Image 1 (cartoon, rainbow, N blue to C red):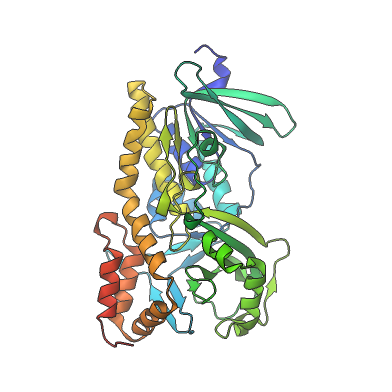
Image 2 (image 1 turned 180 degrees about the vertical axis):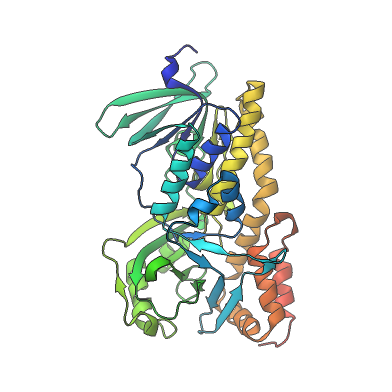
Length: 418
């Protein structure tokens, strides 16, 4: 197709969050001409738990930003703290691997996403901020997606063309919607509410997940941030929220004020004004179709969020790298068809599905308050159970992750029996 060459690219990436910026950066390293679009202007905030898993650090290192990240305000996260519905508390440190202590980070998305976006720009990637994609352009003969149309912040309309379009534009992805990839199964969607606090007491440097009777299989979380801040939130499966008729805002503040495990820690704390925000979470327990004729999806746009923890940055980064490899191969072959892109589905099944399905099993089994109490009692009194939980939560080799049923059977059969 003949078009203005200033508007034509090998790949257009819609959305410059972690998935989009990582995909664009990896593509640029293989010589692919990329246009990276985002409707916002950076730096911009993003509703998120702000946690970066230990496994994510490998991708950040490959992107060349790990040292830069460690120069901005952050908090190292050294483990997990869980509490059961009956108030039993358990600390699970991230285990050593290869003699080195593994850790994650807590970084505001305002800072992280801007750093990844600026890194993409440094790789000579063409970027455009303040551009909202409003639709896809399809070839009239083959129905292949060949471009995007949209509007600048000043109202100016523009069109751009490419061999492949990557949707990295989140849960409300225009690319996923226009290609028919998105589903609305509320059993595989989550809802969350997040705010920032100052002065929360007794923070140990752990990601805290507090399981409450009314919220399971969801939870109340606390993530310690830099400079004495904490990311505090509440999340639940959408189907459960509707069935139980839960008002998340009311439940969030009711928990802070009345929960016996938490209320004393918040007595001297204050909410940061304007930070209470909510959003929808697309769980990877039922992934959306992530490829088609001339298009691919990454991150939340592909429904790749961990069903148990609600963490999405890790799989956004990994899927960005996977998509870049798929497009690079298609670029060499000059083949951007659905059959060519089917290799992405194979890669997702191999690299991410074992983790996603393992986490989904954990989510399903955490629907029982009795089981949660049982396991937390065991973990609080037995090091082997804590080690098993740590392995389940942090194993970086998805092919060696235990099945959840096996894990739970081992826990049940490990003394003490209550």
